[in-house]
Image (tube, rainbow, N blue to C red):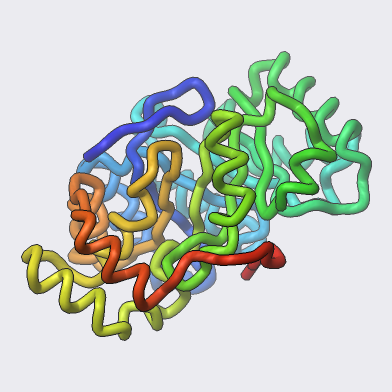
Length: 273
């Protein structure tokens, strides 16, 4: 598994997402087991949010990391409507309780909201000084939002990114890498795997002896400073995701993907799901 830097820590380029976990109690044990398997395979970066299943995903993560907390880099996100001077510490405490830990390694503002960024940053910094979080960052921020924030203490920006959603390559991605702010890519194989129906991924996969999903993940993390956080519950998918962290695509592979999923030629509105 290739590694990169995030929030003063060395992390795998492919971590584990948890969106839609915690929604079905009957799936709880499978979800916990999948996260634990991922940790064993080196995917020690786990991303969650208070929004996911209204705290249910954090509870799944908490169960999965019990006795393993020191092995993982733990990321969660706060709702914008909780991102006030008073709201953030309360939201953080609720997340910590669900996660069964006394600190987050990284705490993100889930998307731009109505509270002044200065107020949100002040609350984040107080949490950091209190040892409740290691670093803070944002999610779903475009370049203009990042310029409004204008704070070098921001550790990362988590955004939608995959071969079908390449809009950030026009401005946000190069700006972020120049600023040395890693990008965390959510939905790296798109939702419901529709992206993988493109024949090019099957063709490259057959040539390389891997799966289309692994090709897609390797594409997302092809640039230094980009991290993918796919979600998987099936043990086979977990194993394939972990293996994709060591796969490097050739120039021929990348050109074939560009031909089908071309890079942007103009500014695009930041895509979100």
